[in-house]
Length: 233
Image (cartoon, rainbow, N blue to C red; front, side):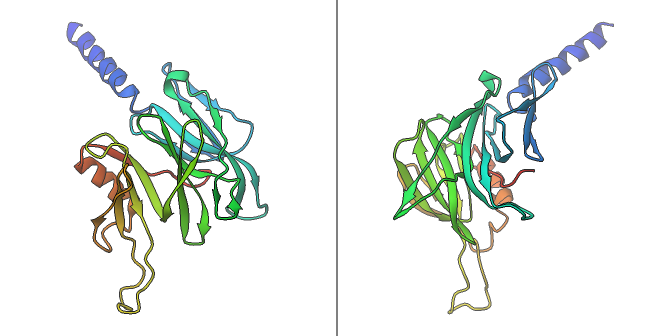
């Protein structure tokens, strides 16, 4: 009996220790839900279809978008207007809207996508549509004020923890070069520090699978880098 009780206590302790890092948040068919501390699955309701769910590595905060306006009759709707939401575990994932309207040149975007947050909760990163092959990555303080254009990227993630806490991993697209026609399109990756310095962190071809590369790179440098996902599933 005592041995059985001890085993049960160990299981409960492991579950509690792992709770903060594994809140089991899901996005399915435009609906975000999570499992609370009582084991009940609860829906995060914002009144609209949701997309682009990002979760911090420790599960303490999530970010996502609500689709305000999208081009109809497409397999994957082209989102034209959105609202970014942030929800923290300590607040039982009560969603807080964040309106972003960045202007680059003479164009103002009413859509923000792929949101994520720095570990100090002071900076919001998000992207806006650029070309058919890249996004324009932006950042702003929380609450939003001025916007910073970071660059045209294919994918990105913000580093949590380790020596590079708060820095960004970026993947860009490099089209076929005339001097190397057989190489084709490549996807080099870079580290962008909080000061704005850019350093190559992978040779051509080493990080074409950005999600896998970012996971490995973050772990090797004592942190974690979770890529924001696109879409409603």
